[in-house]
Image (cartoon, rainbow over all chains, first blue to last red; front, side):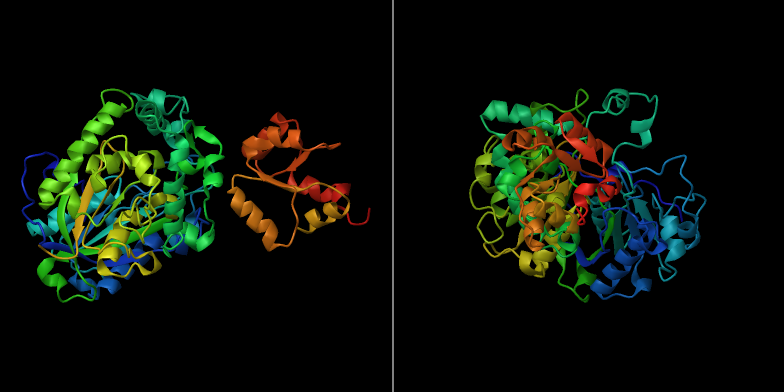
Length: 440
Length: 94
């Protein structure tokens, strides 16, 4: 079985589509995570393939189903955005040979196909539907939600995995090439840090609304605090370090006004979820978390990087799509788990949602209030990438665990966890999911 | 850590300069029961130098781009870890 990218028709990208036809009829039940590591140590058992298998098996076990009940697999085939196996580096033969291979020797090492997974998970004997959700777990979740709703699969595993190699992130691949085409020639070859576009937007945001970078500090400390209560995360597992206002505000610039801590730390990790129909979910081991809607932004910027005006217009449009399809309003959100890697665009997502009634230009003031999990206005209870490392999926795991009531010390207590939203990555070009503790 | 303890006994001013949060740097020193004169981030080395009157300013680090570059630019001498181990400063015999 060789999967392809899910067709565009599966994504909900327009306003005016009405309530999602499968609202409350699809549910997430099982969650499975691998351990985390800063970089791959080149042992077979810690490869991105091995940890993907581990995460998938844990999700199956967590849901309390048998592997032969699983009939769908939606994965993200790309396992990095900035750590590429160098052309002149010998292949890790021991790790490659430890698994059943595909025609690509780096499959399971620096990328991942459904073919590789199925060759190495013989217990998955009944996969009838397989598709790729490009780039992020956020995308794959949209595909899985629609696939289950459409009846293409009734018990579907969703997987995103990340590898990270030795060396500096974003300094290999296209960035190390002598030539490339399109806007990459300017964006990559000339070495602008990945966060430069967000930094430009944030600088304009501060100018427009009279805000400062220092005002981000409460959000940063809160995110790290939440991350340190996420036992699946990198910082909790390896470096249980708080991040104080002083720590954050004095850090060196990477792309001013984005500093070191505004950039998430690349890690190796995998996570999987088990999606199913609301009907089947009733008989599974964990409390179902119902999908109320999924929405996607396909907006393309007019130039190399979106302007603040474009960002604000699109996050507002995304917010409207999210609410319309779910049949809810901003007042219904118990909490939000929008993406944060880079930190300086989290407030764009927040303002687009109108979370707790905040308008454009008000999020940094909102951060100065109580945004903790104990308060009435939880912001990023997952801690996001800042709290647990670069995965782009902590926010989804957290939504599921919060609504199931098993987020442990991270469990929100200032609000009743009923409806949540998560998604990303970028303000333009993201995928979003609305989660609910009940189907209606 | 033993190397730091050794030079402190000789009257050296010591601390840390890292990308790790400064609160973490302080916690590490405290965890090992070692007094420190400063903690800072790498880009703060020039300011640090102004705050201390010393005969020699030296940074020990293991990264060319993030340690050596910043140290030399700030007017510090620089030692790789293997060079530091061989340096008389860190010898308990002297």
